Amino acid sequence: MNELQSDEPVKVKVEPLYDCLVISDLHLGSDVCQAKLLEEFLEWGVHQTRELVINGDIFDDLNFTRLTKRHFACLKIIRRNSDRDDFRLVWVRGNHDGPADIVSHIVGVEILDEYVYRNNQLALLILHGDQFDTFVTNFVMLTDLACGIFYYIQKWMPHRASRWIRRISKRWQRNGPRVQNGAVEYARSQGYRYVTCGHTHLPGMTEVDGILYLNSGTWTEQAPCPFVAVKGNDVRLEWWPRTSEEIVGSTPETSTHTTVQDPA
Image (tube, rainbow, N blue to C red; front, side, top):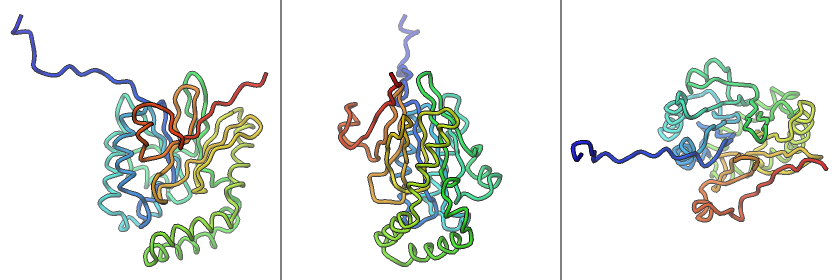
């Protein structure tokens, strides 16, 4: 009998903590990208969820000489986990990402215009949101010029100042309400009651006439950084690094979560 015994530890399959996680606006290549936090999140997330969706703007632009070793480390985690049988990684394109064929080859993930995550309790519509931002679509040259100017701002000004300028510009464009309203109307027209976008860099969650809208914010601001989490029929906005309450399984005060109730 002793010959049949092994000193190898028995591997027990642990069910993922989440059904789906959604992050957006990583802006790899940007000097204000929170790459260290992102690398930690990715290493954790790929083992804690069945699906991970990167909802646009994984890159700041296609000047890959701006990518640091830490940025490449994040890409390495994405590529390493893109072919797993027990995990799905989805990438939805963003307005900063460039041609789909080029970036798909680099990251090793198929790029989609939009994606619908489904479990047996809900369907979550996921799209970047720039298609609802009329400022970007109507003033393409001005937007490109502003992005070029901001590159030098974030390179030579303190990071706190460059983050403040980006927040102010987003609010001045009023793209937050535009994206929210456009996403809610589009979700309703397609028959979905949950929708999440990025693009605005303004994390938040609100219910509009029975449609739950979430924005997953950005990974260019100071910690904590936001992400959308789905578990069963619960959709919530959570933050990284996680709090001690989250780690032991209780609901933290900083997490906002809800389920949309069916009308009576």
